[in-house]
Length: 177
Length: 195
Image (cartoon, rainbow over all chains, first blue to last red; front, side, top):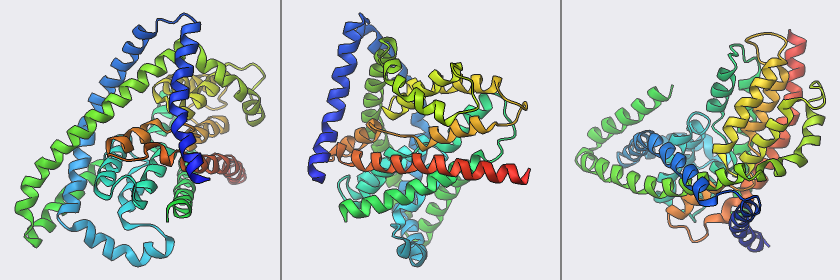
């Protein structure tokens, strides 16, 4: 059942791409020109994000290689284990709402270190795929209309994030443990 | 905030490395890691660029608008204070659909325009309205049906099943979306009774 749904998900991307291209063709969009323009913007964005990604990737790698992560994990294990939270996940949970590029760097390094198809690899992928850079969204969206009093926006959004992370841990435990 | 986190990570790593005597391997290891970050970033940039290109076609052809239409009745139900036909409705629908399809590049401009429309209806200047906060929490709960970025990262890391976590992500965002609606009601009521 899970395998069947999983392979269905593999079909989603090709079907979506075909739908976009066919609809564009039907509406007489200059497909290649628009694609190239959009891709250029994507490349520029990636390029401007790379320094952040590099900074966090190297810092996390250093933290792990020095043995500091292991010390932290051992220290926090009594708190985290009853909650079912792998200690290696902790940095991601802290960084995810703050920075998209930082969490992408973290996810990449976790996938690389633990393997994308391990339990942790599945778990971090689920979290990354189901959450948003909340603080960034709040700052940019509210800032763009000059809001200074955000009232309950931040506590509300962070609570929803926490529910999302908890759900991801439960779902991942259920599917891959 | 992030500045302090980053400095702390680096300094603790170097400090612990010094104390543990792993500082030598740490010095050379850092550069290997930096090169690895560059390789991964290249893979990721390629996928991002591809998805941005596709996103632009979907926007130009009107496909996003088409997909956003079924969302309008739901949004009308959620934003009862906004009058029928308010321009914010269509913009919010486009934003949520683009987000759901992983087309973040298309989502942000619609989201910002939607915020401007909501700001016109704002009772107090410089203060977030209940409607704005509801839109923000729906946005950050990020109902996500096609986590393309994550699939790309998994593929870059050599996964045998890059799309394997898509279903789990959809379940999780579904739960987050519903709890966003419920919690917004709770927080709004609490804010009103304390004001």
